Amino acid sequence: QCITHCPVGALRERNDTDIVLDALSDPEKVVMVQFAPAVRVAWGEKVGMHRVEQTTGKLVAALKQIGFDYVFDTVYSADMTIMEEGSEFIERLKHRDDYSWPMFTSCCPGWLRFVKSEFPDYVQNLSTAKSPQQMFGALGKTYMAEKLGIDPSKIFAVSIMPCTAKKYECDVEEVNDSGFKDVDVVITTRELDNMIMADGINAENLPEASFDDFFGEGTGAGVIFGATGGVMEAALRSAYFLLTGENPTADAFKNVRGMDGWKEATFTVAGAKVRVAVASGLGNARRLLTAIDAGEVEYDFVEIMACPGGCSGGGGQPITDGTEMACVRGEELYNIDSTQPIRFSHENPSVRMTYEEYLGAPMSHRAHELLHTNVEAWNLLPKFHTSYKQDNVED
Ligand code: SF4
Image: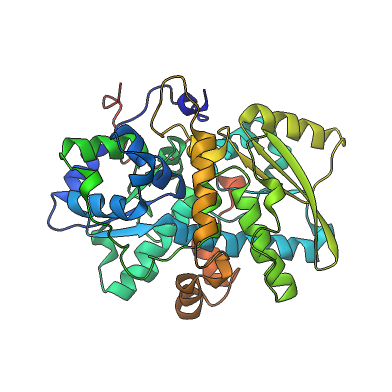
């Protein structure tokens, strides 16, 4: 049910693969691609791969074979989002009276459109942190371009997402801060699969390949962004560290996992009680917001994802007739997390390097310029329409 539901109302999915192919065939362009946490646990379904064979390394290899110059992991910028959003939450806790509560996560554009149109009084409660996709785009055409010595005007940034709403998000003027269009085009997991099949790539037999340097490293915390509750759990792992100077056990906040549409938990962090809630699916979001508005529930931090089960069940993921895959994919993301050598965003070496070399610290002036947005200024309809082709839709 959720995999055919598009929270921004796009009943037919736009097909942008021709735009990607045009860029790949342009010798003047340096084409980089990022792919989201939830893509790695779904991309092989449509191309007929067994679940255990659909590895992240084989996807990197397939993208290299298609011709991308650089292949990066959105998990890196999910870790950046955690650093910024976790720091923002702590800042709000320190100045509690200056803010409206609870603080809401802001990485799901379907949820943002929903709250802006249905509960506008709560827009001020949204974190100002941009989504991992847009943080990646902004850093790609500034910091990374500088580091690699590439003219940012020549970079063409492609994003592979489980999500049709991300096509809308990359066009929103207020989340483009590099001086260029931070992410040039978004394709869904289904469009990616079409490209793999059109190229005749035998993905099963590809050797495992590694992400390109600099933005290649992600953590288990960034991986679980793709499952409902994952953003909350990852943020709490790092918020705990930022408040106490010590890591919690990596699974300390696992009570927010699972497919329930509205979950809540209370944790003690640095001696303070933190009341959290996690909702997925816009029906659950509406029930939760209505209850907050009526004073029936009180929380400090709330994660909301528009798609039931979170991004693993996103509207751009492969469709399996009659079967809901969000739960299976979500469990796989938690399995990946449990086997990662690093499970805390603040321990990601690429994240540390980014702050040391470029941003200074979370919430710094430069971090605000590139990684945060004024959500209240967002237009419901984007001003960029550079990639839109009205007559180019997928059946
Ligand atoms: Fe997109 Fe994820 Fe939000 Fe669904 S939950 S609209 S896939 S960002």
